[in-house]
Image (cartoon, rainbow, N blue to C red):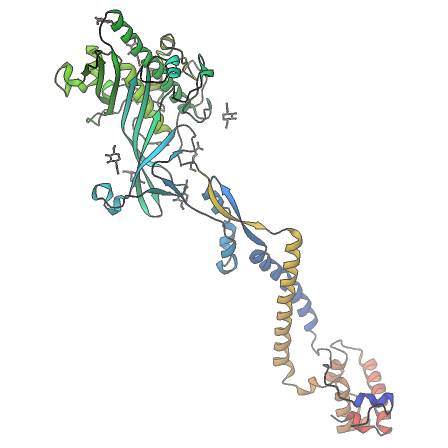
Amino acid sequence: MGRAGRSPRHSTTHASMFSYPVTRRYPFRWITPVVIIGFVVATILFTFLNFVSTGYTLVNEESWNPNATVSSGVWMNHWPSFLVSKVEPSCEPINVQVGSEFFTNQTALRYTLTDVWQTSQGGAGAGNGVASSLTYFSNLIENCSVNSVEIDYAAMDRSASQFAYSEWGAVVRTYATCTILGSGGLTNFNITQEYDYVPSDISFSTLYTFLGTNFLSRNRTDKSSLWWGESLMSMYWTHSTYQMQTIRENQTTNDAPGIRKGTLYFYPNDDRTITNMTDPDFFECDYRFIIDKSQGAFDVVFPGTYGEYRSQTRLSTLVQQASYPNIWTEADALAKAAYSTVMTDLGQTSAKSNLLTDPASLSFFTTNFTEATRNIANAYPGPADRPYGTEDSGPLGTTPSVIKTKYLCQVPQRKPAGSLFVSILVADLVFLQALWFVFIYVVDMFFLRRHPERNHCEGCVVDARMRNLGPDTLPLTKEDAEVEMGGLRPRSSESRSRSVSRSRLMAQSMDMGNRDFYRP
Ligand SMILES: *[C@@H]1O[C@H](CO)[C@@H](O)[C@H](O)[C@H]1NC(C)=O
Ligand SMILES: *[C@@H]1O[C@H](CO)[C@@H](O)[C@H](O)[C@H]1NC(C)=O
Ligand SMILES: *[C@@H]1O[C@H](CO)[C@@H](O)[C@H](O)[C@H]1NC(C)=O
Ligand SMILES: *[C@@H]1O[C@H](CO)[C@@H](O)[C@H](O)[C@H]1NC(C)=O
Ligand SMILES: *[C@@H]1O[C@H](CO)[C@@H](O)[C@H](O)[C@H]1NC(C)=O
Ligand SMILES: *[C@@H]1O[C@H](CO)[C@@H](O)[C@H](O)[C@H]1NC(C)=O
Ligand SMILES: *[C@@H]1O[C@H](CO)[C@@H](O)[C@H](O)[C@H]1NC(C)=O
Ligand SMILES: *[C@@H]1O[C@H](CO)[C@@H](O)[C@H](O)[C@H]1NC(C)=O
């Protein structure tokens, strides 16, 4: 219609390639509050959801306590997993290789892992289920039993610096079997603990002092049992090696061949009813002592030397007979100290026999401390050198243990405030826009489609009315008045007068003969 540029008024008749929507106020009272409240609620909700699902990134972190690290994300369990599954904290289990060393969270002794096997798969005997490493995830060490304690005494075969500390030395090895209940079921493992109060790598600088070797940490009040365990082990180590030295000196004085080295093998008595550690028959003891007769000749002292083999492994018999070399009481006490320290360090709270958790037994084994400290060489025991009860220390006892190691964990970390703001803002805008689109669509669908005239522009409505009824039939109905006023109910007189003036304007335009313009 109409040629462009005829006059400013007629330029409206040109139809461009592009179009604009004609807007009209919604004719519903409820829409303003619904939109405002909906906007606020949706913004809060979307902000929250976006914060949970995108506000965090996973970062690597090392953790000593993976269970605590994993459960620190427990608040996320209340959220649907599709939102938070990517930001849940997690930790990797570790593999303790056979042959490697570890220590427990009591941080006392070090252990070497020697065997790993799973009973459910037949175990070591069947040749199945033997593993090269222990898959470990902070599992409690359970059901430990000490299989044996072995003490190797040696003199001239040790290094000169060890010899300076003590002419005789001893290596105490404790063999134990424990169990963990992991994700793959029960796993058993054998461990060996090796204790040498004067180890081969000892520095000369600590001569005539408490050496503090083998134990990673000590605390008189907090870990009293282990503190006494260390004292007992070092005391009976220094005392029994000195005893060997005295025995050898006596032999040399009497021109008799002396012992060069010896081993004692303590194992739990077959009679399992003996659980009191003060009982000398708690352990049985097999032994070999090698007597150096010079020029390559040697004798061996073993249980058969003194009589019937079985009876000569009874410690009460050996102590009573004072069999050569008479170190039975001291070596037995050293073995019991090692047994109890290992059980305490492994956190075996329900162990039947443990002299470190029983004050009466601990008193029994420390009564001779004052006497023993006078019979030592140049390596001084410690940290306690007086009997239990005369030294300040905390309460006896132990707590369950886990292998102490660091785990690699992935933990959620909040994004920096700036980038968090931008990412949530962008996500919120997208969500809100989508919601607005849906809302408009629904309103259109259910409230406007049924009344086609509501999709007409304001002017068309009036125009249509006028053409149907003529300007004289004004005023408009009440509903139309509302439509025009965008849902705000005007005072009826004002509404009427406005409508009237508007229709008068229209009528004038029509009079000017510009009918094309109003054609629908
Ligand atoms: C070792 O860890 C276990 C398990 O987490 C805990 O119960 C025990 O108190 C810890 N012991 C020490 C000495 O920290
Ligand atoms: C673990 O140690 C015990 C006692 O020393 C031994 O009988 C057992 O054979 C060992 N287990 C394996 C798998 O070697
Ligand atoms: C840590 O969690 C693992 C796996 O859930 C479990 O087997 C282990 O017993 C837990 N450790 C402690 C000390 O609670
Ligand atoms: C430890 O021994 C007890 C009693 O024999 C048993 O109930 C428990 O399951 C054992 N635990 C493990 C981890 O083997
Ligand atoms: C022993 O442990 C307690 C409690 O953890 C601590 O306050 C104290 O300083 C520790 N003592 C030593 C000598 O480390
Ligand atoms: C010293 O050696 C002699 C002869 O071998 C022996 O009779 C005596 O009991 C020994 N004394 C000590 C204290 O061992
Ligand atoms: C072990 O025996 C000694 C002496 O017979 C006794 O005083 C002590 O109470 C006993 N200990 C336990 C744990 O039964
Ligand atoms: C303490 O010394 C006495 C006397 O020498 C001895 O009979 C007893 O066996 C010793 N006790 C220990 C635990 O060594």
